[in-house]
Image (tube, rainbow, N blue to C red; front, side, top):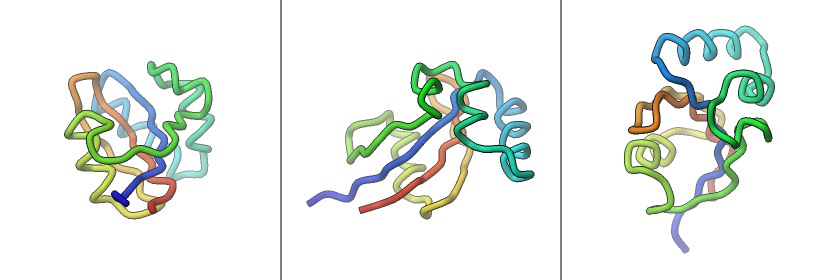
Length: 92
């Protein structure tokens, strides 16, 4: 079975905004609350949750970051859609 990642993300329009939100999360704000408040992706309504996905399910930059991160990591990734704060929730 191929490796899979469970992740959530927050989609914003600038690296500056992504960095500011990441800092708020580091200081105790909930990732899900920040997603609901700031994400321009429809997944924001459910705390940014993307569920489980495997190789080939996401755009290459996003997928590469998700599969190279560790569980619990929050990383900033740029794709054609904008800037993502990517939270790796679990892997299997």
